Length: 232
Ligand SMILES: CCCCCCCCCCCC(=O)SCCNC(=O)CCNC(=O)[C@H](O)C(C)(C)COP(=O)(O)OP(=O)(O)OC[C@H]1O[C@@H](n2cnc3c(N)ncnc32)[C@H](O)[C@@H]1OP(=O)(O)O
Image (cartoon, rainbow, N blue to C red; front, top):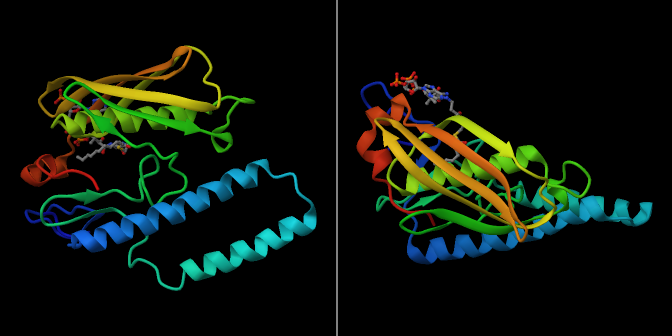
């Protein structure tokens, strides 16, 4: 397996992979703690956008937030990012990921599902993802599609870093429930081509195609990267 932020051998350094073998009970516990905390902070973010309360209430909220931040900072990770933490059996945790990270309140979150043909997620993009008034920010939609297309390629066994992502905004996406889906169309050597879309109840709003490229360091670490196990 890949070393933690270290020399992968043959001069290959892989940043952001950490081996931490967690027992099933410990993993279940950490998952529950992460989900509960992150859900609370997401509610806080939403409330921050939508509050219309008085100054005293805002000051009160800020004191509580400062206390909460200090409590969380009593002990922190050794690194400045969560990275991809994995067990020796190949199971992985991308809990810091901006789109799917279960420890990341910025993530909507998207919970990805896979079948033989596609990867998809149904989730809510609320007030904190606003671009034009009442509508989802275009950059957020690009981020969503980057993740879904990249994960579709990865799940189909052809992972890669986004080389090129082409987005077509067909019509505006109102804030609220959305569905995102992607599929791997073809593989040419180290390049995977994926397509996908975002839709609402009224139909497709955004289409995308992406080229995902297995980077040099992963080509050197080929067995490890391509055969890594599922996410927790
Ligand atoms: C693995 C774990 C993932 C796990 C991924 C899990 C899902 C993740 C979903 C989120 C994805 C992200 O956000 S990824 C983060 C955003 N993306 C990045 O940061 C990528 C930054 N760029 C890079 O690291 C690099 O430029 C790469 C990896 C894209 C390519 O570099 P390289 O590996 O050195 O490639 P190189 O040998 O020069 O070229 C190889 C072939 O690819 C072509 N090529 C090179 N760049 C591009 C490009 N941008 N768009 C199209 N094609 C390109 C070349 O013409 C060549 O074609 P030919 O001559 O052979 O025909």
